[in-house]
Image (cartoon, rainbow, N blue to C red):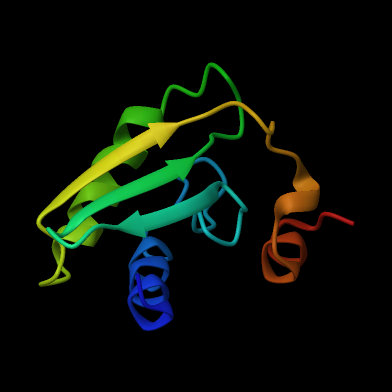
Length: 102
């Protein structure tokens, strides 16, 4: 996959806001990888801030909706993983400032 396409996918994922924290999933460091095959199938590998996150299904639905806006995307599969575990060190500088994390 070309870097330009990967950037487009990540840009779309920046529109997916974690409802609890009010910051997008990319800046929170929840998205570990995104890939698209030649048929337009996108695989998103990500985690959640906690194992029992009740908003996980809503976030997955929002990911699929945002990526479907890109004409190249035909299908999206979201893989939730727990390794490596998420930590606040994975957040971008922007997210840390917005949430007051040092």
